[in-house]
Structures are given as structure tokens and as C-alpha cells.
Image 1 (cartoon, helix red, strand yellow):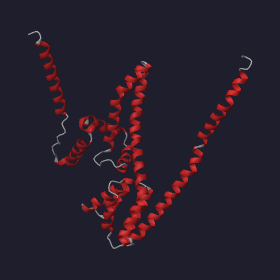
Image 2 (image 1 turned 180 degrees about the vertical axis):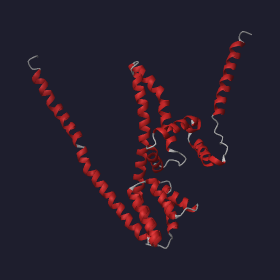
Image 3 (image 1 turned 90 degrees about the vertical axis):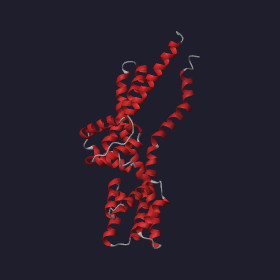
Image 4 (image 1 turned 135 degrees about the vertical axis):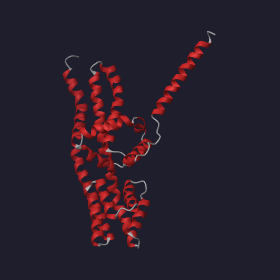
Length: 302
């Protein structure tokens, strides 16, 4: 009888742990929220986020709480973050305040790890460093969004001349603008330029006008070169100018600007390599002359 007590105790502990885990997962279940006529779009957005983002699925109330705080605390940053989310290619279900709340939640989750590591190495003063690194993590995640938006814009502008050339060739061969654009999107499927123009086609197929769809593209990317291309398309739509000729001109302009950017970067490379070059030369001089200097200084000692 006495030998059965540990087995029974282990079974009770295991059963209690199982029930606790099951209760937690039940509370954090990913079942869709019920629809409400007043908030139907927001409920659909939240359901989609719960499906595609693991952290949002389990910490939705906390992220939404931070989102409400961010809406009040950083009202000037929200429009900029909204454009960066669109330019970076993130799902349109994210609102800027909730994405910033997600970044803050990640930083807070890493806070205990920072505290443990810094207190182990530096003692009580490490708590201040842990708080500082927690704040820096939130700032880094925020800056990472801007960096992702810039990188994706670079990818789009690199491929845009080739996309315009393909659309131009198809239109000169007798294809309509939308059909040529659809073929171009299929050709660059998976690439950011294909994704953005594919979204334009999707909006047009859902009933949105061409002008409105391309204006939405311009507002999403918020780039001077893309704005110039969209302006040419809108001008051609309004004035009846042949789009093939406009696309060929815009493709040549984009290539010229790309060459100018490459020349600028190449010109700056020499200046940026100046300091590393000086350090390498100084190190080489020290390595060569150092033994002679040491021999001269310690000659009398030996």
C-alpha cells in the first residue's frame, strides 16, 4: 500500500498539470469570434490575425491593450507606420498601433531574460542595463519595420523597368493593358513588384476603378519613382496617351536613375574606405617598426 502512494501522487500531479494546460489552451483558443454587424470588418481582421500570427493568437488582449495606449501616446507616428507596413508587404490586417504593441510585447517577454543575464554578470546594477536593453529591443523592432520597407522598395524599383518592358512588348503585340499587366504579374509571381501590381489587378477585378487602384498603389509605397510611374499611367488614362510609349519612357528613366544611384554609391565607397585604410596602414607600420622600437628601448636592460 505504501508503495502505491508515490504512483498515486505522480498521477494526481500529472492530471492536475494536464487540466491546467488544457484550461489555458481553452482560454486561448483560436476559434473565430462571433460576427457583429457594427464591427464586422474589425472582427474579420482579428480572426485573420489570430490565424496567421502565433503571438497575436495567444496574447491578443495584451497586444490590443498596448495598441490602445499607442494610439493615444504616439498619434503622429501611426500614419508613418501604416505606410511602412504596406510598403514592407505585411498583411493588411495589421493596424500600426497593434503592430507596435506586438513589438513592445516581444521586448517585455525578453525583459526577464535580460534581467537574468545582466544580474548574473554585473550584479544588482545589471537591472538598469536589463531595462535599457528591453527599451532598445522595442526601438530596434520598430526600426526594423522601416528597414524592411526600404529594402522591399529597392527590390520593387530594381524589377520595375523589366516589368514595364514586358508590359510594353505585350501591348505593342496587340494585348490590352490589363491583360498585359496580368501576364507581367504571372511572370513575376512571388516578387514584390508582382505582389503589388497583383493587388492592383485584384482591386480592379473587385470593381475599383483603374485610377483609384493605381492611386492606392502610390499611397501604399509612397516613393517618388513609383509616384512618377503612377502619374504617367493616370495621365495616359485621362488624356488618351498611348501607355506603351509612356511605359518605355518610364523604364528608360528608371534605368538612368538606377545607374546614377550606383555611381553615387561607388563615389561614396572611397570616402567610407578611408578610415579603415588608415587603420590598416597604421597597424602595418606598428607591426614592422614595433620590434625595432622595443629593441632600442630595452637594449640597455639586457
